[in-house]
Image 1 (cartoon, rainbow, N blue to C red):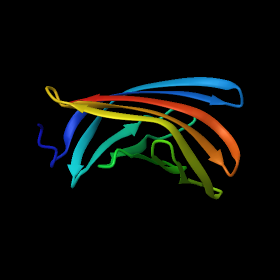
Image 2: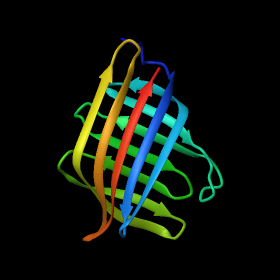
Image 3: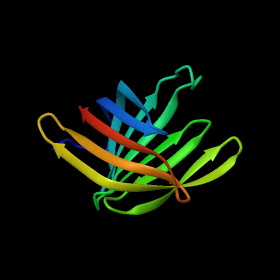
Image 4: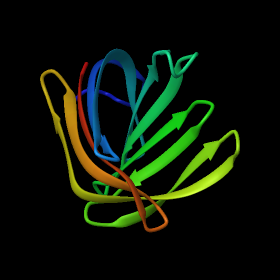
Length: 147
């Protein structure tokens, strides 16, 4: 196994499929990132590049927790921290320039796997995002990374 006690460069392929208010959108991203293990938690970090909606790159951290859960943090102007736990409803925080908006994730499907030679992994996360009882959207994240 790779020594992940120091940060190692990885290639990341990420796709998302979103359904909000009957409208669908797809997003794909191929970037270089870093992976490191601290204790039993594996951290995958990368910069989401700037876009029309986002004038500067946004640091993203995905944590793979030892219990199989996954958390995702985006540290842009709108800071988003979500936690995915299979079959559970979990509170999340979404900080906007206008204040903190409480949201919740419901994760009907969560699969994470790692492999050797070369070291890499994948995650498949299907979740719904709620503000109170209102469904904001359905999301599918597909992530693959390899050193």
